[in-house]
Length: 314
Image 1 (tube, rainbow, N blue to C red):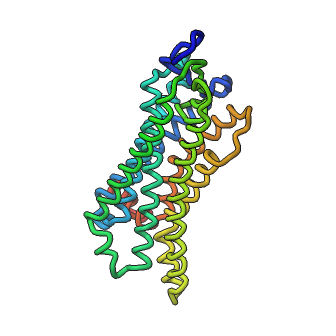
Image 2 (image 1 turned 60 degrees about the vertical axis):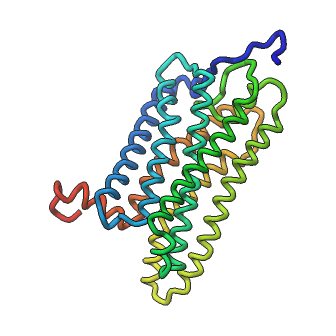
Image 3 (image 1 turned 120 degrees about the horizontal axis):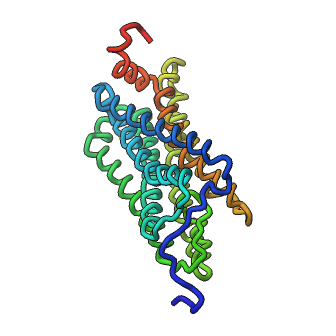
């Protein structure tokens, strides 16, 4: 029940980058270019994998699923942020805020689960190559991707229901550019520190669980690679993992900054800027890393998109 001096909140105001009024135009241009590049990069990867039959393998099937999750994740956050940067109206409805939180957490955790699946794929390919076709058959791959998406949806539902089951009675200003948990917790009526701690522990446990599984996979991978007698063989084996490993380091590096850093009392502007690293910068870097560090994909991109226009060797 609300007290006599409280009114239930029906909409929120996203403060976002309004604390940096002189930089908003620069932010708009920068984030728009990053968003368009993220969309273009992931679409090119998906089209290349679809067009090139040599890439119709489990590893690139998972990469295609990862690109889809990144497109949806950025779509849940960035367009709204761009609109607020050039608009004087920064309100978002209660239901719209809940939807944004659900989809951002769903696709964000789907991304983490898919990275874990890709780590398992590399483990099987390098440590158990003779059983690879049996363990990573088409049905098994489809089940792993579907499980990642389902796991992401469960995480999104758990977090969103836990937060929006609370009562918000004002003020209604969210000191962030999207509906994120920490600034929303501060707007809830009463003390919901136990709920906030529970949500935080669930998120951290899921991320650390994924990271631990990836770490275990790469421990076995490195041990297997070191036993390969030839330097060329070791280099070839490691090259199939390099792009995935770099993306994992970037992904979990920025995620740890968001979830594990101490919360200072007056860190609203800092939290907003930190949020960009995870919501815009990580998806922006991912297609670049996979395109440049994966020789097979890089050659396929050249073949699919440049062979007809540029007959000479690139």
